[in-house]
Length: 361
Image (cartoon, rainbow, N blue to C red; front, side, top):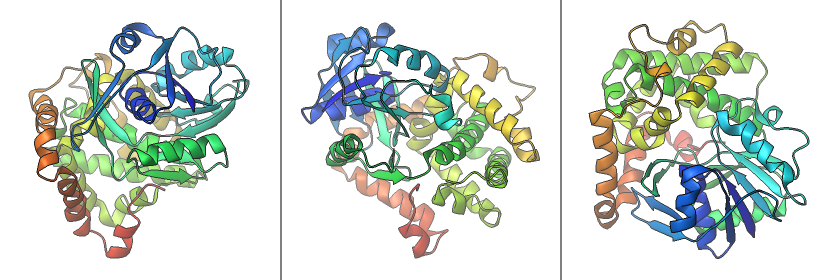
């Protein structure tokens, strides 16, 4: 399978490296300094919790004019228009899969884009450490692909599954992305109020409660608007009756390395995207006081307008600890510890029937 990667940040690097590691041909669309690094050193990805590492060669191409089976677009929301413009020269009809925050769904993609357009979402989060993508798999959120009967998507599903990625197929990706964008906007806004420091957010009970109230309000607003596709686990966790359970859950997550790897790193380095998501959600959902309050920029901080945000000492320490402990974690049962983290946290809160379905779908 011939794959073109558009966007060689964490997501493009991780998925491109794993696809190439199976012997498939991977090209990366040239764009700035980062793709210069790829041309010189290839795609490098390190699972900082599982301990695995992937180094793969990839050709950097000057434009998208080649013949590809799959085009994986892994760019931030604010880069989407320019990425689509660069795909106008695609040959044939490849499967063009967009991986990223996109609350507008298919409407955000030009209708005349060559190929068959699909929406999906990555199941990893992380940060770039030099030329290497340090990442962690997001176990409650598998890599999300559309439930379309396309043999190229089936091939991609099989490749990623063979590489150890959990995959879920979703029928209504437009709705799924709308709910996910609302969720991410709330988490990012809460992090900004705490200097994008997940450890600080974990200790700030008032902000966590506001964040959880805002997520519940956002979901209610989308449901009232007739939007389907709310992920089942988020629907359960953020039901009003379980609010304090959700507060405890997010406090524990933010204190762990996942707080930095899954949320804070991206919130810090993609400030323009997070602000745009917040604006989209605030404009669409106007009847939730908690959401309005959370998404309003705090008067005592200029963080939202001073991107990129500085790395706080505790969040830097959290990411460093996760990275430096990766090999030791692997040797001492890192995957087992991860399973225990989720089982301990969720098992306190949910009966077994919910535990069995604790996946985004």
